[in-house]
Image 1 (cartoon, rainbow, N blue to C red):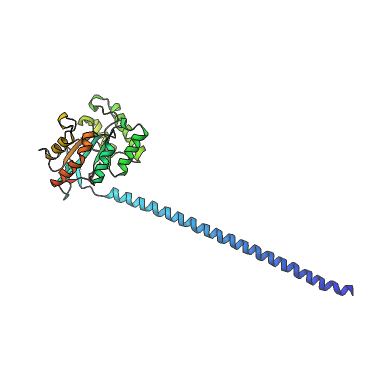
Image 2: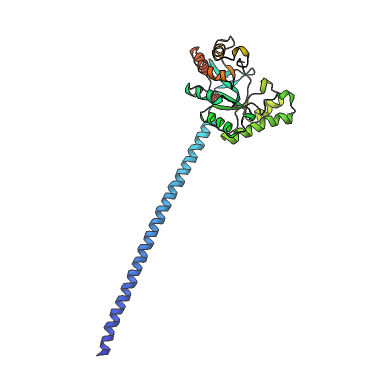
Length: 280
């Protein structure tokens, strides 16, 4: 009798073992499927992130390329006036501000921004040594204004050796690039005193060289906002393509709104520096 009971018991035990193995295999399969799903989901998210990064990089590259390929509308003449190329508007004026960023450059930039008036700020390296000065320059650049090189110490380049002149110019380019991520696009020598060497070096550095047509804010009789605004708009030197020189000064900052309004009332368009030809 006992012999006959063993076989059913063996069958039952085998069934239990098989059932347990099947259950274990099913659990393992479900776990692997879950992990696979998680892995696939994670992979999809990573793919989306990579695709987004690639799209962003491609868009940035296209925008940069479009900017680089933009045909210039103006060039700087030998006497530093702004000359139209082809059929660009000839009744224009360019606003420029030297010796920035001293004490009033940010105020000037904010007034210009409010008036939607473009300009170039020519900077001196000795005004870019503190964190506050660097932040001021970055703010001016971020508002959309062009940055120019006005040498490090504002020395007369005629009094310097070529090596000294190189240091004055290149040092500022490096400072500006570290602060805003790009080099200056324009160069103006202190006192308008370029040398053959400084002019060639600036052009080799990709900067358009310019002096100016007229300026008055350093003269004692025009160190008043009303007097300065009047002469900047009503001088007989104002004409098509005039390159207006001003400085980082208190009275100049106060005169900016009236200068912008006065020029526009006379029919002058203010040139956007981005439309000015650069060295090839």
